Length: 510
Image (cartoon, rainbow, N blue to C red):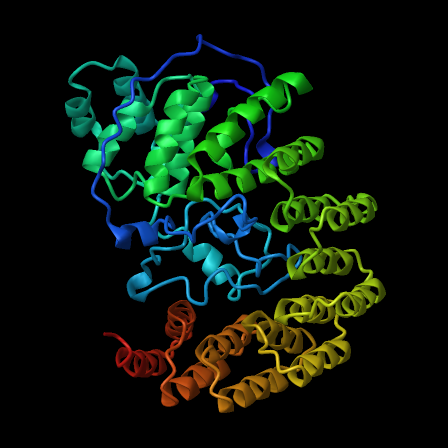
């Protein structure tokens, strides 16, 4: 049985699945909170992305509080929806193909459509390896939900007897059902704090609990929860505000609900406030409710980070015609556009094929006193490489070097891939050799990329040779590329070469 058949109107992070369906059940309930102070494991918290930098609403530093998702990762470096070859992580896997712990469980704070991974399909296929957050068992979810629904003094014992292999993803799915059915989740959270303290302070779980309070219209408990989460420096994501009936109610009613949420966030302050308001604005913009997003910043105070969220979403929705007025409004209120603002605009202009305007924007940035950074040039280089204009890309690269800016790793990846696309395989390897001579820390990733691209072209022996070259230099190949080459050698009846490659790689195993 799939417990998600409940029809409700809510905000989904992937709008492809957004359904406007109508079914509301049960009257508001009030929870009886008794916030348990659980053990705090900073190592686990780091794995689950719950150690953001502090945010202060009045200082306008909300963007400094990163809601970790992967994201849960908000980073001003992640602006480009069009880029191919941008890295999710340099190396997504460890020996024995075990997924790294910080790959995240929710992919959408900043641009989820980042393009191909560095190693493309090889990494996408490996994502199916059993490891972090494997497929949720809906029957298991339903069973736990029924235990929570029944309540009773022996709730903890019943949950203990029915819970196994608990993960953040499973907990999030349980919360989703509880929220859809408006079932109080406080006792479930308290049980998590005792039985699985390493899970209960993930951004996703805490946000789901706030959403539960919202569904029940229990803002008193919401404030108590926020205070507890603030003490653990938790950041909220858009999940916290899925209860807001943005698409199915009057403007007056939704504004009243939004105001109650903001009042709760401001009263508590800290990381929950900064990240919560940013996530609220992000959610409203994602739904196209820009007027409500501006309503939020009119209440909380205008700052560049909030405006940048609106600009980013308008760029993604190709609403650039409204951008001029928004930029003028920013300046009017003393929120001058910063480097992130311009990089969002650069990204959109490049995606739209308006390269001349993008170059003009670089000049405008400098005239306004904003110096283009490595990301600014990376946007231009990525687009130039993607459209086959390597000469122009090299001109931008020369500007980076002249300005003393350290190129981003994505810039190097773009050049390597573009050379391969143009049939210049030798030039791609020479490019990586030159970078290696500069003692670039990411040389192992770039060598692995070249080997992988050769493998895709069917150059098996060349790919093996490149892996040997890098291992002779003391550079460890990416495991997925290495194992792919070994398996291809074995299938090609070159078992001796495969064994030799494995023996060479064995010295990197700790």
